Length: 407
Image (tube, rainbow, N blue to C red):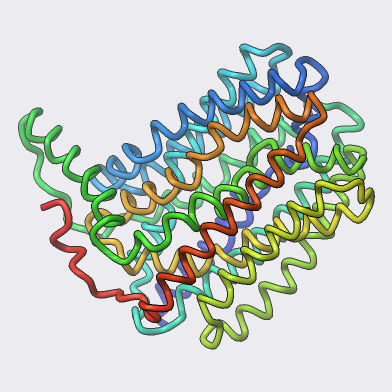
């Protein structure tokens, strides 16, 4: 590993620490409930996420065209601004505007950050170096999340607005960290306005085209159902609703999340040591089955045992991510890498637009079990499609015709 690769790797690890330090992770629903009900929360979250999704793919194309570092910095600043609006808000509309700004910021960051680091590190494509770094980054991220979750849970009891105020500051730190990381790609010369628009639309089409014209289409059901579930449990309404369903208080919920993070850090450490020997098919199958078991278990009144469900969702998300990141980055054309990763984020976020209001409404009506059973069935179908297709295609082709997609 070169000196620059070591420097960038350290920068990536600390970037993960700060971007995963969501002080509101275990308490944001309790905060909303001080002012609005769960049904309003579901509508708010669904609408805000829908706007975020509309920004997802275009933001990737903008990152590829005008600079991934610039989009990352702008996105982190927007996340901080959204948290500030939450800090000052006390009704539906300020929360909606704040969540919308926050989601647009997340859309700007997602895909662009992985694309920037993957491009600059220039690891050998035949090695597991990137997967190992992403796994280690997930460990560091879990450590940052652990500290932020516990801190947020404690400070919420003092003043419910303090965790949001800490979010304002914590998202500005990684924005400064990536300031010195520049794109190494040659920038295309500026063209007339209409030509720029056509080029931009072409990039967006290329991002979607990579998923239909390469082996990545095999992963679309997995991204939508399994990673979509993890998104709802990680950033959305589901995790906090489940903590409430299992009758955890805000502080107890923070402890559950922190404990799950500790165990996940250990699991990721084992994955890091054996990264080169892990089977993609085995990991995806194991994660899918764990998600199904967790959802079905949550149907029943299992009380404190619900902590295991939270752990399954948290560990599954961070176990699956390194494999999906490696597959996506290796398939993406260099010039549209951020666009392709943003398309993947689009597929991952898309279900939540429907899930959020459904989860909120069913929870208010005491019928959340309908959702839990239905989504576990969808995951089963997605896993069946993956295993059936993978039986004929036992090895993902990483050198397919991606350079001609959309052109």
